[in-house]
Amino acid sequence: MSKAVLFDMDGVICHTNPFHSLAFKEFFAKRNLFPTEEEFSLHMYGKSNSYIMSHFFGRKIQGEELLKLEDEKESLFRNIYQHHVEPISGFMDFFLKLKDQGLKTAVATSAPMANLELIAGKLDLFRHFESAMASEHVTRHKPDPEIYLKSAEKLGVDPQGCVVFEDSFSGVTAGLNAGMKVVGVLSSHSKNELPVCHHYIENYQGLEPEMLMEYLQNQTF
Image (cartoon, rainbow, N blue to C red):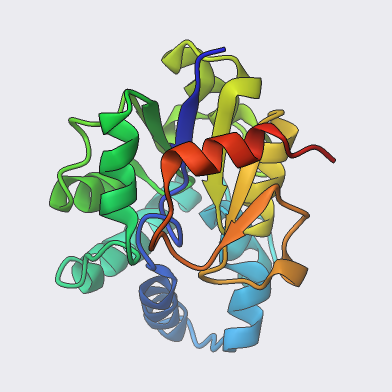
């Protein structure tokens, strides 16, 4: 069976969550809303903008209003983060080793394409990905597995041959719902805050693709 490795972006390729917090704080402060870090942890990290805004505004945010508000918030994020783009420790070495071994790779993020273009563009990742999908490419967001199933289809790899790197509850759930092996990246949450994953990492330092794939092949639950 052919294999592929699929990455979420925020909290998996780069530790962007602190910068999303800054952008959301500025966004909400304009509207006299001041969520705590604990509230962000519960209702922002790994969630879609529709969920986040609907939760904090206390009403359903959708359609044209969502597009307008999302554009405002994500523009704030990009303005803040553009000077700080840096991969999680060891990511680039691990990623390039995957490519050296001929493994197909993809990015599958709930963030808008403009954010993906900023981060993958700065890190020169697009030429290595066989698939790059963002929020615009799906109608159902994580924890629905749509983005991972679409990615696997585009890669031409059976979901059972895919390994997903995720950092959030909804993202891990999406990977598991897609029938894929999931590696939990503990950048934003502890093990106890995530569904049970097949493996966990703090970062990518010393992570060897061959050993990881062999280990995951034997993991079931």
